Image (cartoon, rainbow, N blue to C red; front, top):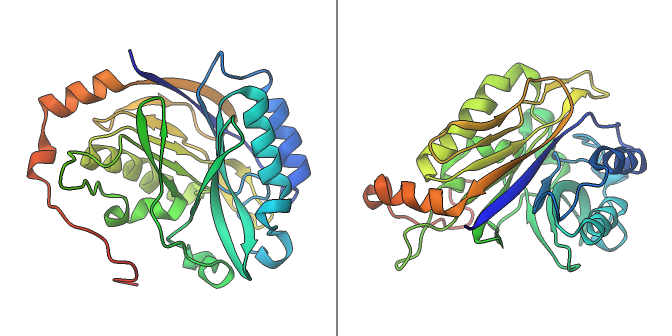
Length: 271
């Protein structure tokens, strides 16, 4: 049976302190590795918290403390680790999700939708490409926080000879507690409309700006039902299992995809 073991890491983050956050996460993960999981998912900006101090905190990919730590942990633990970090590249600053593989290779996705209510659009550059990675027979669409509110960006866009473009949606976040209801509903909605499981990993605690985060990290199945849904406000590390056979069987039994609207995205349209 094709199965993907995915570990959600809900944690409190130290403000703008990459070294402290990496040490905390290493302690939190303990000896978790390839015998236990295939994928470890950390929150958005796991090294700093949701900082708008991009000029001070962002580092080039080649010298980033957080990126180096992420890749070292992937090699050491023998599984994929992912989370987003602030990076600078060619004079532009990005909220970049890094997908670190145990063989040392990596993929990246730059956050498309920047949270203007916090001024993120003034401190970071917008990403322009959707990114799909593969792991254990699952094609996984990567996204970051505010992206979750934009269903067109995350909608299945299969090619002419495909039924589905991806099999799992992953979203890492720093989503404040006052808006926890939309977070939960949107995770479930994205699963239902795309006929795929969804992973949503959020932080807990309070940041230096006084914003509280309730967590509500979830693993949602292809029907929008929670497979992992721990009590809010507390750190946790939990692993869930996704079956490719169960997903395929559901898609065959309930072929709503046959009635979907086919479209393609042109970069810049609507922005």
